[in-house]
Length: 186
Image 1 (cartoon, rainbow, N blue to C red):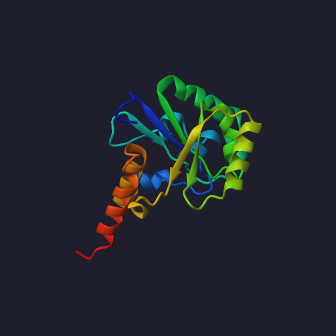
Image 2: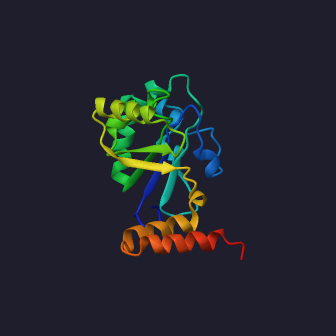
Image 3: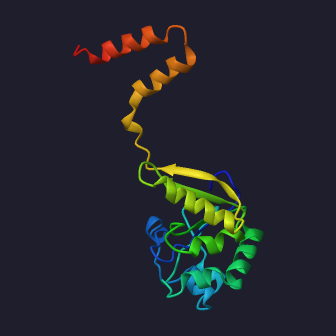
């Protein structure tokens, strides 16, 4: 995204388990939290990356009241200001159903992507998260499914669906041939 868009900024708003400072090898001494409480200016907390058009604002020191400062007027003003300077603002937040931080921020964004871990996130938890987003009228863009085990299916899975959708008439004959060929030790 940072290579195709003119200017992108990543905000680490996971003030309970921040990670972006590790990803980009930044210190966590200043960031969104220190800006929101008035310890640093915006210019001091926006950090450059190796990509010219990608900037990051790390979390900063972990505050005692994350939901309160993320729901503040100053946070809304920060988002408005960043919208003037950046074409994309990507906000990393804690899990939606764990704490209220994400729900507080969601209505002030242009859209929410729900991140779901394949095979681990229970369906009722996803439904609960969607309900919370709907209750605050957050614009839901879609979902990202991460942790998918692509090796689980391999080429056989792909070929099976290719035959299933692509060659209906011969499907059984080709599937049988493929299974026999894969079962053979030679």
